[in-house]
Image (cartoon, rainbow, N blue to C red; front, side, top):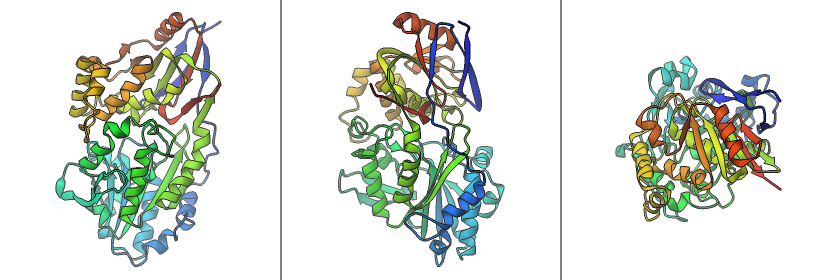
Length: 430
């Protein structure tokens, strides 16, 4: 049997895998979806025929100000397609352009500035005509305290630019999320433009260790339920949701009342994203979905968690991530250092008594899930020195040889390959 080459997402392109001749590969990817031939027309139709709300032109009429939330650089949202038509509609309806702000929902991520900001917005006209600003979760004066949620007592503090806007719209990408079930919609508000105390409550162990806080699940998911309660505390909020295929082309766009429009996008993508497998695998090769999600090791952990349902206990999970921007925040580095020093069980014990998680330690907590189940091996070109040690996983320089070793160890030649990483969710069904 000759070697077979398959490619997976890596950086801004793809990484070719040379599989050993004995390997029996199973490709796990989203079902093909028809591409939208006329994307501007699809955006216009969504804005004119919304779900659960009047058209945008009618919503904007008589409003004095507007705030549009967009995701930060870690999400490949096609902002270039919809920001200008949304803003032009608002201006034509009478909202002064000086009272329209595009607010980047950074959560606790770093701000997007300079060339990166231009790339994120994707349209020079937007930058020239309205304010585009970053959310800073640690700036106390930037937030309004809405009080705690009734259900779980989460303190709710949100960016005042969004809370005080006369017209509030959150935009984003709907894809599997390893804690909140699905990204987009309500998640762009919290944690997107929330105060650090709100975010750190969301990411405490009482939420993170809940068995229902997993990808593709909204029913009983405590994070999702808190996000919905926060939306209702705000009052009228609207959402524009996009869905992309493996080529990053637009295949679905919905607009309208934020909860209803998000639910419509989830319904569209849910079945084609969750792929049933009739077996588990002792060897899995996956990615961090390429750029921009594989810019840091911090984001890479998402790709380790998503395929766990089809990993045989004791199996090997091989993940490729460029990590072009390196490791992640200083806080995440400190959490990883504690994991390496204490080991998984003792590290988790330090988290369970906290009401507020330390910043970015929740991603380290999520790494415990694959570590409990099997062996994690990482191929990257962006980490060196101590950073490689602080991952807490096994570093490899040759994916083909890693596959050979895994097959030799397990005696099973079947290999699952997930080119798009965390954007695809395998489900085991015997």
